[in-house]
Figure 1 (cartoon, one colour):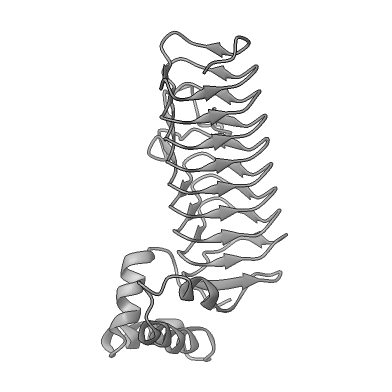
Figure 2 (cartoon, rainbow, N blue to C red; figure 1 turned 180 degrees about the vertical axis):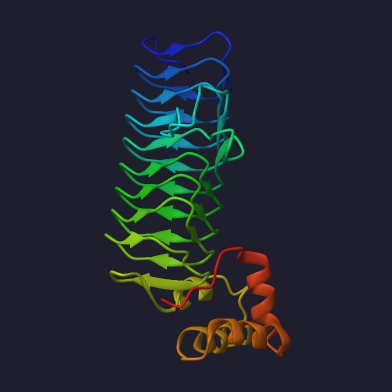
Length: 255
């Protein structure tokens, strides 16, 4: 259903099951998938794909031009996955040529009101980003990570899978997977055991214990980080190595 006040470009692709509400704008070469709902006053720019069953609330802007002085009007993209919820007045920018050309949002992602996703960000599946969070360009958020309200993540930083970042924080360094980040300056409080235990199919008690031992070695000892990492690579903690190989390409920093 398309409301009579909506403005839809003739080249836009709208699935017949989608709902386009009052005063929405869908620009050329945008694609709106099956059962997508755009509530009202949503602007979907050119080069945007919105996956099925995603709901976008009032005033959100999807695929606005990158806020990057290097951007010269090149045709770049924003791809939003399936079963996402994008709440009121969120802003998601397209990618830049220098950053790969695509800003990506995975499946089952919740973006709460007034969140901003900068150019070339990559957000994996099942991420929760709370109200007012600001993501600079080229930020990576791993699967099942949670970001607390009004937290700002500086450009090119990474938040690992299953991590929890508290609210009203400045993230100016990589946050390791499965950790809890708090404070100013940012510090790792402990493993995010709550998130791990919610996924027993992936995190057995044995695997969680291996991660706990590894994190104590990495972040609770005074030994040089490089020495600990090399020891973990050669040691018996294969469950730790497998987890990091699967979920992490960022830096291991002891704050």
